[in-house]
Image (cartoon, rainbow, N blue to C red):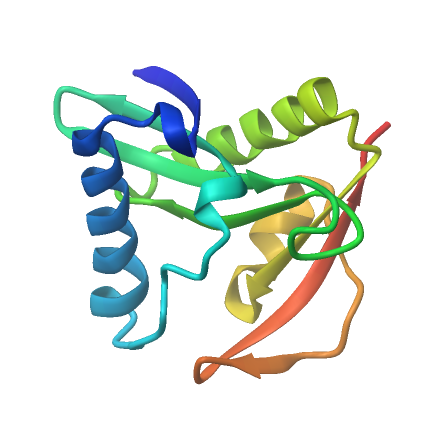
Length: 146
């Protein structure tokens, strides 16, 4: 498994296509939730993904402070292969990258409520009341990086 970290303008056409297709497969098709995935933030993001000969296995993007929240943020977090620990692995890589590259002391995410326990195991804590985003219940969560 290879970890790839690239800014938007470093992605190849093939990598960008694979990322957008995988995000659409997970967030739009699998979750039956039509929403505008391309939100204008990808160009300012760092894109981290795990891939092998079968393609993208896990992905997230890292946004600098101010792009979505006052703190740096992780977003569009998913894995295409469940039960292999790849979700936790890509989140840990995102945390490491944000700390080392962005000097992040805190990270914020918007998590689907059903995934709260997953993120709590990684150190995040809920910091908002539940809210509906694109028809799915979400919460904001924050991680203090020590």
